[in-house]
Length: 202
Length: 202
DNA sequence: TGGATGACTGTACTTTGGTGCAATAGTCAT
DNA sequence: ATGACTATTGCACCAAAGTACAGTCATCCA
Image (cartoon, rainbow over all chains, first blue to last red; front, side, top):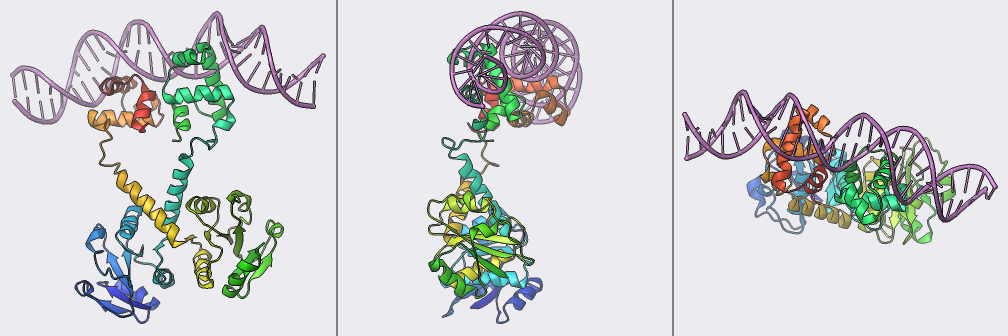
């Protein structure tokens, strides 16, 4: 596997050279028309505040993979980097072993992102999946409540007043209040707005 | 790095043994109280249709990492696996080289997911980021309100009481009420719960 | 048969939410 | 300077929300 460092300064080169003894240097201007029979990995620096798009439209031949080195790889940067065609994005002060790991994954055509970001992505997706099946997921608050209490809770969450709820459920306003009191206690909340947030998955 | 195959049958063992010559075997029942001074990686099989939760509440000591081998690792399975504490999830017919890659990442405390899934996660997040430029989208209700009113509206939407809002904004409860009254009129709603629904996009 | 639970209601009460009217003060544009 | 808008607050008032205590029915379970 060939590795090229593109416009990196001494600090990043240190670890990179340690990780890949055969590392070659390249200036940004040379990249555009660059050719090599075997392909390999370009290691690019993304400076703080720099836009991803300014450094990605390089080296789009399939046999070259681009890895960005960022100082603070946050979610949006990495996501847009990968969306723009990069194969990976990692911390610019990553240790040589990590860099080798990245190269291994990227070299096989994979994508690489750091574990903290991966956890964020997974977490975000997990949350999205948890919220979606609102119809079939017991949603936790449901199983704590009785049938009638669920009906009341849903109306409250929709913004109805006690009077309205009493009317549509054909019970006294007093009874609505009674149900609500037990709901609040069961769920450990204090008023209808908190209930609304809970029911609506916030 | 130690590796244990938990309840795997011949087919999966083949590649796994090739990847890790020192592989040891373990039955599922032995896992619960299992101890080892060095820790290592458990390779578990998740059969089609089997629920993730049934095989994850194992081996929660920090020095043990669990990798699930699935036949068809789709998005929801992998996400819930990782959410349940697994360190990775890959195809049960993965090649030895891939397994070694996984072990490397997982052994260092990272998470590992296949590239196709990673692409999905990244894609989904990219789409989410693109669709919800929450910072610049006026969200319709925002542009109708003054700066101060927006602050109040957001706190109400989060479930705060007038008293609490007054405290954090360092104004009188009366003033909070005043802001709310104008908010209600501007947005054509009648109370804080409806405001909450509006602000939270429901 | 007794006990637990849930649905339902009443009276009385406190707290919170929300409005009307009025006033002071700052900013900004005409 | 004058008017429009916003932020702020006070006082009074009403309505809605929520609590405390008590009671009736019905069902289900040991």
